Every structure is written in structure tokens, then in C-alpha cells.
Image 1 (spheres, rainbow, N blue to C red):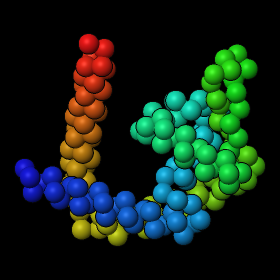
Image 2 (image 1 turned 90 degrees about the horizontal axis):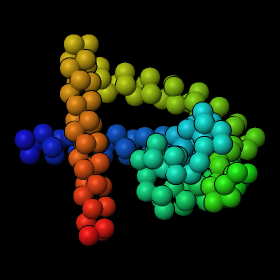
Image 3 (image 1 turned 45 degrees about the vertical axis):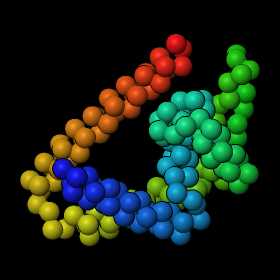
Length: 156
């Protein structure tokens, strides 16, 4: 079991590193492209929902959005009905980056998956998808339980 954990951890780091290099070549830091694409699909999304969908801490999201704002890729506007809420929008420059990133990412993912998964059969891929989905579900449950436990601990 420990060997499987270590192998999955290594795989995750390798994929992260490879993706990071590819994204950096496009002039973005890791995660910025995904964040911009999510904003593009949800123009006017609130910062809290964005952090949740990106699985980021709110403080990390604030920092990431600050960088994108400095690059003139997004705008943060106060909600007209609730001044405490910030809504996130792409600038024209941000939209151009997203369009380019989507095209580049499709090519990158196709090449990457062709290389990485070439030795794995369709049947094995299907099994792997089922297993990794189950692992993600278990981790989601664990994360929500830990979050609930921390909230209860704080309130006692």
C-alpha cells in the first residue's frame, strides 16, 4: 500500500512538473491558464466560488487574482447588490490568452497523453479511471470530514 502511495505521489509530481513547464513556455505560471479558463466559462463568478472550484484556499486565490489583475488579464468588480462580494471578469487581453491557451492546451494534452499512456490498453485505462475516481471521492470525503472536524473544534 505504501509503495502504491509513493508511486502515485511520484506520478503526480511528474505530471505537475511537466504541465508547469509547458504552461510557463506560454508565458503563464502554473494554474493561471486553468484559472483564466474557469473565469471565462463563468464570467462574473465570485471569488469564493472560484477558490472552491479551483480547490484553493481563499488567501491563495486572492494572491493569484492579484497577479492576474497586475497583468491586466482580469477585472475585479464589486457586486452591485452586495458590496462585500467581488465578481471576477476577463479583460480583452485575458480573453485572448484564454483562446490561445485552449488551442495550445488541446495540442499539449493530446501529445502528452499519447506519449504517457501509449503502453496502457483501453481496458487498463478504463480501470485506471474508475480507480482514480474512487480515490478522488475518498479524498473529497476525507477533506470535507477534516474541514467539519476543524470547524467543530474551533467552536467548542
